Length: 403
Image 1 (cartoon, one colour):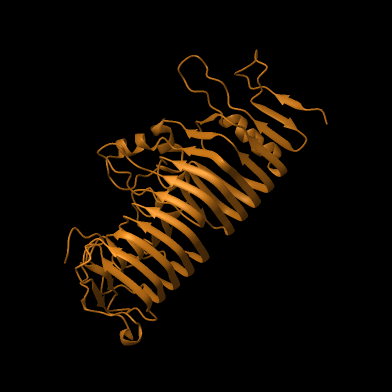
Image 2 (cartoon, helix red, strand yellow):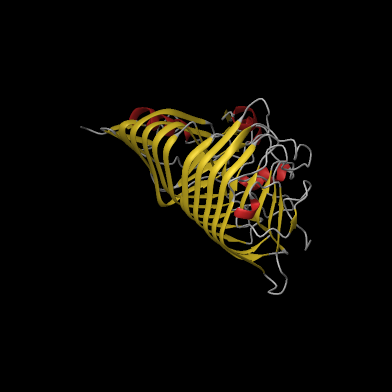
């Protein structure tokens, strides 16, 4: 079939096509600079490619810098290969994103790009880069926690049978990626880094899911939010982050959160806040059947931590959000201070089915004996947890020294 070349109205006199369609393959090339000082917007031709070749087709974003100036809501892919060879840079128009980002239901959060459909393969070949220009967001947010409208870079939304491979994230606007109402998702060979170079922290630049990850960020590395189940996550290296996390969840008592059948395997945590931890609010729902296996870590603030009342001691002992059948197996490393684990369970719904097996945590100074603090663990004597003291409801999630 003869190639059909579509020229955008921005370039009527140029022989450089933004979108070229040959059969079921759409190839998108970045628009050149306008010469006016204003960045071109590559979003329209990318969306056109997604629409035209998103079913039984192939979309190729070539080398170069693509400027993303608009939300992308692409929810009807079917049997598509998407190749990304260049950089996607989201625009610096903070006010546009704050008012236009797409909702993702969870905790009032939103996203810049929703991907949905069936049999979707997105490959970056190690050269694809997602640039959220996050420093602009960190500075304007001024360390003030979450911000409505602050967009997640990429969200899988009602998606099934998805592969995402070989993509690098730098300076994401908010969370790097989020998965909701989706199944059979595989993410491999991802590299994420959100590091502020100003006085303002990245604040909540979370990441999410699966194999062969290297992550540097200011908050949680891999985090299972409410209503996640049947997830296996392996071969992850986290720097300066929460490492492997369940939660936070249970913030809305009227909306139960359920997490079950989660397997974290072969994690390395370097200078992290925590290694393997569970944090909930005193809402409703449950956490059950979670395994943290084969963890190695260095200089971690609190290696093992469980709390039913994150950020506040209110409701710690009245929470009915049950935490059960949790296993920590082959956990080895050094703690920053003298706490190896701190587990406070609600007295109204004590934790049960907890198990420690082959735990070897030592203080990084090589001299201090680490403590294991426990409260309200049913059948603690059979758990293998060598409790040396009580864990108060008000126990902090981050320590500032020995206790």
